[in-house]
Length: 280
Image 1 (spheres, rainbow, N blue to C red):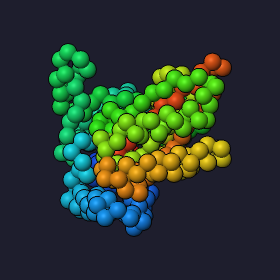
Image 2: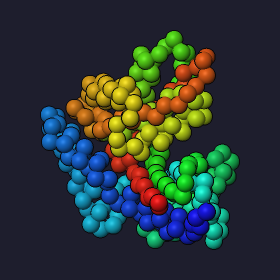
Image 3: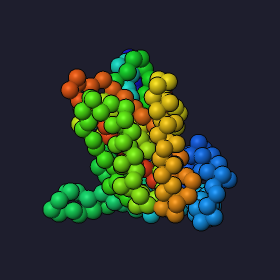
Image 4: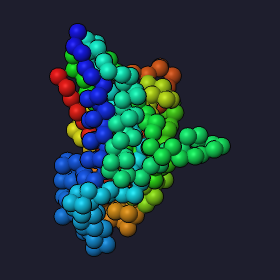
């Protein structure tokens, strides 16, 4: 049995929420740079150049790349042979969020009640935490900071099995068309297929933070097909009708009921803030 101090989680989360809000991931910056190089629309090329320059300034000055610094979502994988000490896991993660947003001078955007009071908690907490148990003594921490300009454009589709592959494609394209310029394209699109009404949305959220192709070749092909079809819409950067509407499409899939085909589409802006830490 391995002892693991929850203070490590607090410190990691504090660092991660600051880092992802002031710079792009290397993979995303590379995709954005290539999109800028290949863009044929003068207006969209200018926008993409501005986005890259904005990130450069943000990184140098340690300032947020966007005023919406997001709601924090945490995916935590815990080895069954790990014993947490020095406090409660969820409390430590939320404290890390609080400290990170205070130290980084990041905007606090969370309200304590969704409908009636809507009073700002002033700490950007509570965050949302998903925990999964795995073998051994490994601890994996993934943090996403999700802005709501794009989150509001996300969609859930409860398809019939007979709608199949084309139904999934139509749903993803419908979500992107409905989002239009409102989610600050170029986009990162996470798609969750299978599970249940609620779990498909979790899958889509997790997919939005993945930077590699699906391990299943069939889904990897579908990711590329969807990316091509989305870019063929020519919504373009900030809706200016250019070549690049999306930078990446990632799919997470899960077994589902014989009578259903849930499909969730999580729309992200070009920043798609996320980071990972692993302790062996």
